[in-house]
Length: 400
Image 1 (cartoon, rainbow, N blue to C red):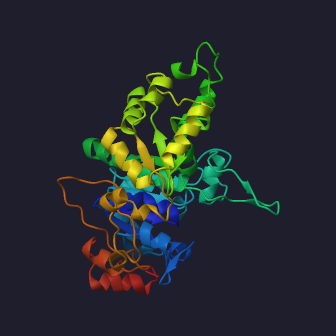
Image 2 (spheres, rainbow, N blue to C red; image 1 turned 90 degrees about the vertical axis):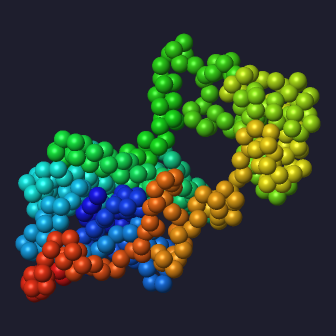
């Protein structure tokens, strides 16, 4: 699978997922290059971690698309490609004479995917933006107020800038499957803001459901069918599904099914707790049971996080450790499942793809390229250009 990518900054992650799984990704850059290499922090030996991660496993070729020769070389790349990724404001390639219709003329099977901040339509389509904007728009991040009264951006996981490329990669694969079956390409687009909202569908869809009459949409039986606050907000006062402090940290206790709750009570030698607070069979968080919450708080402080996780596994009751972005790397599950790709290979210690093939070997990605690092190699090996033609392109400025 060959992907031609024209990208700026983070949206280029759409093809990172494909490169990790073995796709050939050719990143076409302007002579100035993608300034992702200088963006955000940390800067590792002069290059941003963002570039080292998002551009890993890709090859870089410089083509000046302001020249007709650069445009023609781009079209030659498209002739043998499966997909083109436009990871920037929509219409960037169109303005260079490389819109979808032009690409279809040279390759009717091409899949053309545009990934951008707010998408190609709507009142925000032309609004410049950065990653946190999509999560703020989707209601995922709320401002904090500092001690001196200023609004501040809180610590938070970034959703839209990561979910958008994942949805985009899925769409590209679907388009390629269709193209290989029918011989017809397609055009699709993904907005990172849409992706942020889609990832939080439970809360927004719950609010929508609660607009319907109470006799049509209720809570569950464990709560007497009370309509709880949407999404996870209704779990704030949970007891059997709640955070608890341990002797050295915290755990998340999740015994909302009666079977799990009974297993826990038996495992700690407190069958009386189950007898006194049996609860409903399913989805019972014992919400508002302050007596039980106080008892459990005392019990969980008696052992370490690791001891509680071991008990959960042994007794078949869900208990999870609570990590931070800094401590997760020491978690034994992380160590087993997500071995770091070493800095010596990709410039900085990086997480591998979470997709694991059990019977197929997938090579680790190579280091992210410098600007135009593979220009001659791609022109020669992919397009079959000879030295004279490459020299001619360089002479007219098509290669920067």
